[in-house]
Length: 564
Image 1 (cartoon, rainbow, N blue to C red):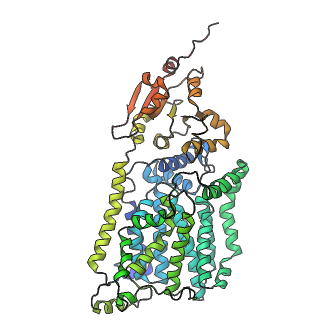
Image 2: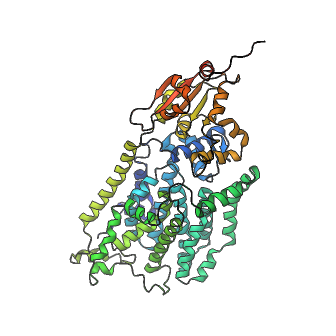
Image 3: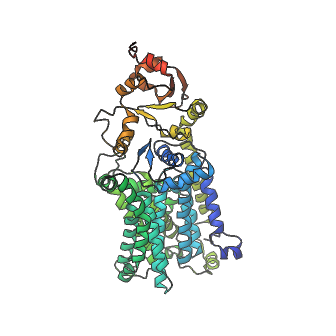
């Protein structure tokens, strides 16, 4: 197979090897970033939290509907809020940190492999990685998974690069420090997995190589100090402001959610391997290639030589890099397969290793192939194991088409009416008006309205069964534990809401958002002015009602005020 050149201007690219691949990858990741509405619940929720930071000026405490929201640390919110401050509050802008993370994962992988496996395998790995639907979709999805996946990946790469630099008697300590700094950012992105997973991958990899000295090199006091400087200020500030934060975030959110059942998205142990195979098509089909390879064929000799599994090999050898990819893939897959709750985005950190193994095992490209091998390869007679340029080209086109088709399908299959409702409501919303969400958390509506004032959320807060499990109600109620006053003001039962309709302090218009089903719980909606409704394609039939204070008093059947 001919060498893949991602840079036709060889002189310039020799000085800046990241230039052309970096630009092409950025353009590819941004191609469809703005075509979809916000997907619920994740994109609306995280986008709303980031926008609240910007509008309120409180960049320290993440808040959901005005209440402290500690399901996740703040790094993504900071990046998204900063982007929206520069470019405006739009869904595509809020997705930019995810695109930046995917770009960082791709370019980090490319530059690492270029240094240690050569430009040929680096170029092919980047192409495979960039056109995997799982990475393409993750790079334009507004949640934290792509960011933490990228940070875990580049932490592993920085640590491995430090080890390989030390093997070659080159300066390596700054890369150890960089790895610790990146791990700190990973902890600020999603918690302890930011350091546990990259540390585990590097430890197992070096233990397999029997490189105890290299393990000790990675235990840097300076790096640990840098890690503490990155991590401790925000976590310490939250515990000081909100006593009990440590227990909630680390014990409940990090450990109990990992070990316990009862949360959403329960899947069997084989879920992630199946997901990886299906969502990285068509590239995963290349793993079938070795099945018909002949042991005497030239292509078979290009397959990874892992050596004897128990035999140590130099970390900077081809087998050392192959083992790094295998450990990287298997350890993270095993880690996330243990809990019952599984989400697709959790396995994004394995994609660089997966792409590398596609190139090494599936395509049979050698990490140690001489530069002159391209000419000799052309003289080698074709055989059943030799991937033809047409087959490679068809795979690339198929991967690109599948990435784009996935985005288009999601856009067409999941219409979100909140943007249209917000466009109608925004010019009619007066200062002091109150948005009321009936048995729902429409955080996408909050995002599009760009209104810092929290909404009233009317639901069955007094029903213990409805509050059990991993639901939006539980999220809001837990957030309210850190600010009971705001929770008392904003989280209302249906009875409390009817009482508030009769309050003499109600002096502004209410805008009620909910599905048609909520009319059974709140019969007064049948007589309330219906001012907007979603198109028929919206399966929840969401609507918007308007209640003036007079309408509210009349429809709620409030007693007449006592005259004196």
